[in-house]
Length: 159
Picture 1 (cartoon, rainbow, N blue to C red):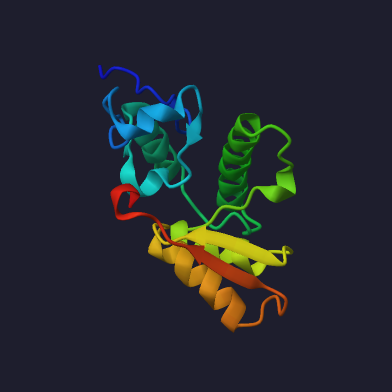
Picture 2: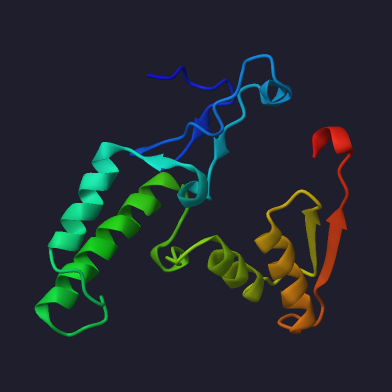
């Protein structure tokens, strides 16, 4: 078993994160007691055996379109509702209609930028490329005509 990392890195229950397990003397240790929630777990985190078994069980139960009006659709809706409830239990103040499941990071970022109501969005040059593209795309597509995007540069030592 790996030692817990010094920045209290959290992921969804049932996931183990080995990628961001950092040495105590690294620059990131200066975060102290700050908690980091990894929202890109699918891209860089290996699932535990418990998660693998849950996925296998869901697939064996007759996975179907949860919008379908038949029994397999009912089962899929139940699985999705349980997943939504799990997410809601992790995020204080979250509401059911605020939990949206996407196929991955790029779709999630596009969804966020499509619904932005802020006048200014600030990102950094070291953001994931899909964040930078989504921010730029939102402005170019005039999703929000008032959207002003700014990308902050990062010193090479921090990139």
